[in-house]
Amino acid sequence: MREREWCPPWPVDLALALDPHRRGTGDPTLRPGPGGAFWRTSRTPDGPGTLRVALVGGGGGAGGRVAAAAWGPGAEWMLETLPSLLGAGDDVSGFVPGHDWPEVLRNAVRRYPGLRIGRTSRVFEALVPAVLEQKVVSTEAWRAWRWLLGRYGEPAPGPAPEGMRVFPEPEVWRSIPSWDWHRAGAEAVRARTIANAARHAGKLEAIEGSADADRLLRALPGGRGVDVRRGAPALARRRGRRLGGRLPPAVAGRLVAQR
Image (cartoon, rainbow, N blue to C red; front, side, top):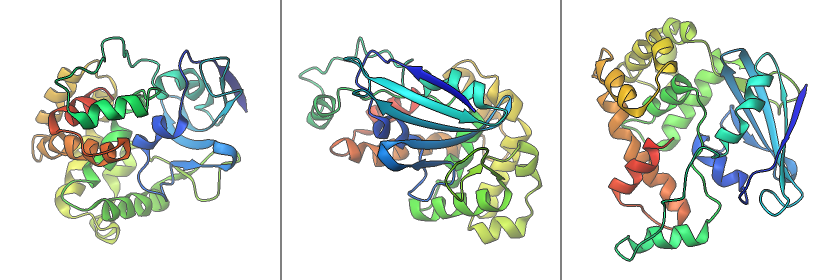
C-alpha cells in the first residue's frame, strides 16, 4: 500500500469532482464508501490500481487535506495524478459569470464554488463507457458497463469493496465475442466502435490536446468517431442537472471538452 496527503488551495468536494466519472450507482470502477470516502480503480500505464480518497481536517482550503491510499502496480501513478483527478489543472481564473450568462449557470457557480473539472489521464478508459452511452438511455448503458466489467474486468487490487473491477486491457476489448456484446445489451455498431478504438488505444493515450483527439476520433473506422463526439454535450447536460438545472448545449460541450 502507498499513501499520500495533498492540501488543495480550494475547498474540494469529492462527490462533485468524481461524480462525472461514475457510471451509475453500481459502477464497478467507482464507488462511495463510509465517511464520505471514494474508491476508484483504473488501468494505469503501470498496471491495475485501486485508489481510496477521503477528506480530512475540513476537506481542502483553510487547512483541509485530501488523504489517499492506493494498491496494486498502478498505486504510485494513481497517487501522483490525484491532484489532476480532483481538478487541480482546471484554471478558473477567467471563469467569472457575467450578466449575459444564462441564469442557471450563474446560479450553479454560486452554489458550487469548489467545483473543478478533473481529468483521469486515461483516454480509452473514458471512451468505452462514452460509446456505450450512445443512442440508449443511461440505465441501459450502465447495465452494459457493469456486465462487461464483471465479465472481463480484473478484481480490484487491495481491500476494495466487493465487486469492484479494473478496466480490461485493449486486447481484451478486441476479443469480446459478438454474443457477449449481445448479452451486455450493446448492439453491433457500438461493439464495433469500441473494438476499433481498442486497436488505436496506444495512439489515444498519447494524445496531447483536444484538436489531436478530435482528428483521431474522426479517423477511427466505423463512423469516423461521430457517435462519441455527438454524445458529449448530451452527457454534460445530464450531469448539468445536478448543478441546478439544464445547461445550454454550447456550455455543456465546453465543460466536457475540458475533461
